[in-house]
Amino acid sequence: MGNRLAAARIVFVLAAAFCLGCSKKIAPDSTPDPRAWLIQSYDHGTITATNDGKTYKATCDGHRTLGPDQFVYDVTPSFPCSMAVEAVGINIEPITLDNDFRKPRLVMGHGPKTSLVLRRQDAIETFTVTAVTKNAQ
Image (cartoon, rainbow, N blue to C red; front, side, top):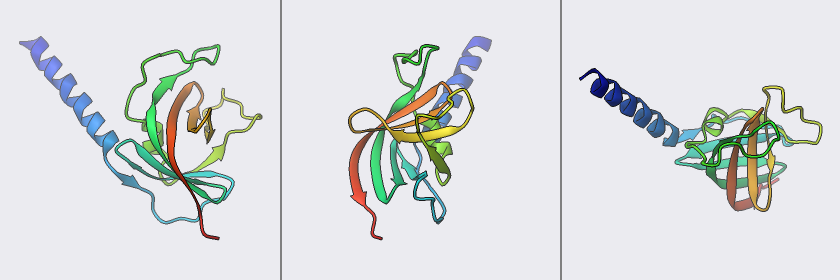
């Protein structure tokens, strides 16, 4: 009986965490630094982010952990993209060649092909860009 109750609690907690990560989150109105990335919203796996005069819509491909060799360590991604949910409304440093990924700083930038990457140390979230629009000046 105790094992069933514990299993039921675990299922409930996981379901609640999944639903909270999928819910809509919108940033308060703010003026972002144009060089920085700003995730304006996260809605059921889709982010709206701005950078350098453009607005990007992109869907979450998942949260992964990188190994010591900086290659993907866990092959199966987990959802939701929790770093993106937490970063809504926060200016995020752009990824550069000078980034020290050993520090716990959140960085964001362009990834391979048409993707965006959000990274903190060995945690990485990737997003497939679905639309890019130029912001009015």
